[in-house]
Image 1 (spheres, helix red, strand yellow):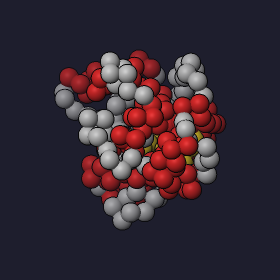
Image 2: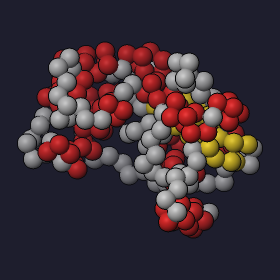
Image 3: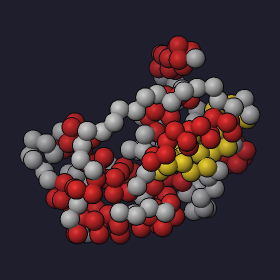
Length: 210
């Protein structure tokens, strides 16, 4: 299974073809919406999708058409917004993206420059990476019609549920445990409130709390 998926990816790369976000399972077609920093890379590997394909519902509909979108089983993973923001910051710091590490940009300053009223385009360089998770899921009518929304915090249970529904014979790759401190330790009152306002719809819809 893993060898087949790897061969398929090489084939697509050689032909400069991107695999369709619409996949065929034993029980019918399915679509995985890969929101950034939600461990979607592990899901993508398990189902043979390129790990960097971060497509919103609207982008997927534009690729495959409304009819196929409606027919498919659609699922995604979401994550506690405060934890997700810390994960994005640490990822960018590790890669020294926008010289965050070189210039020793603190988490508090970075949050203010990306989620505050005076956003700095040096750091707020890819709006899609910062948009609320629910925006990834809205269709062309602004509605959320996703069949299953799993949570990063219970990824194994979520993936097992999806496997059963779509008839997938695959295992979730092992997730490396983060060595960083708990996300709450990164925040002060101001940055906590900035993230709360920014992701208010996520917090309400998916039942998250600080």
